[in-house]
Structure formats: C-alpha cells, structure tokens
Length: 198
Image (cartoon, rainbow, N blue to C red; front, side, top):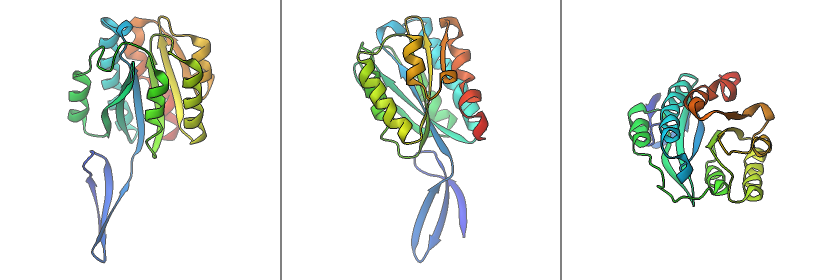
C-alpha cells in the first residue's frame, strides 16, 4: 500500500512499505531561485525580489514544482530547501536581507551550490550587477547545463545582457528588465521556464 505524504522537507512523496522497509520517492520536480543580496540590491530592488519570489513560488506550485531559495554575495547560502509548504517559504523570504552573506557578487558560488541538488530541474538567477568572476560563473553554469538543469537569468540595472545570454540555457531565457519590473518578471518566470513541462 502506498500513500501520498509530505516528507521532512515539505516535498510530496509516495510512501510505501515492503517487507518492513519504507521507501520515499519524490514526485515533484525542484526549481531553485538564486538571488543576489549584495549591497547594490538594497532598497526597492530587494523588496521587488522578495515579492517576486513569493509570486514565483505560487506559480511553480500550481505547475507541480517545489521551490527552493538561495542567496549569493561574497559567498552563497541556502535560505530554504525546495518545498511546497507556502508558510515555510514565506517565513524564509520575509527574513531575507541585504548583506546576509556579504556585499560582493560571487555568482559562481551560487551556481556551484545549485549543483549540489541532484534532482534540480531549473535555476532562476536574479541579479543587478556583474559577477566577481564571469569566467567562473560560466564554468559553473556549464556544469549545471550538462546535468540537464535549465538556467533562466533576470538581470536589472548594471547586469550585462550579453553575459546573461551566455549564462542562460537559451537567449530567450535571459531577461534584462527595469528595476520596477523585477517583481513581475520573477513572478512570471515560470511561464517561460516551466510552462512547457507542466
């Protein structure tokens, strides 16, 4: 007999018992929001990004995806493992702040962190500037792409569109938007990234 349940990370799983063994098989695909929290994201941009993350979570959930959240600046850190639990995600998003992992823009560290997820389907990068090392970021992105992970980039202000084109899986997944449109662009990213995989 098998039952649908949420595991400890809030992922929808199939739980079954066979000869005293319990197995859990993830049923949801995972997507990671990778957000720049460097100093230049202060003010309205971080508010737009946080609201966009909440919108993205709801849209991804409707499409059958669990959403994780990570940040990068001087280093990268997980904020919320992929989950379908709205309250858990919202609490983590609300606690986001500028400088939580420093003030630089080490995008490569964020992409390397994304690479540690074995079942990741896609990464959405949100940034407003230049990475510390574009070469390292492209190297890390290449590893993700080789593993079948889609990369969508949403850049604003000083983000380099030509670099974003190289970073994203395809040019149509590299967006350069006005800061005041950041929330909308993040919230609607699932239509570009996940819409065809529903």
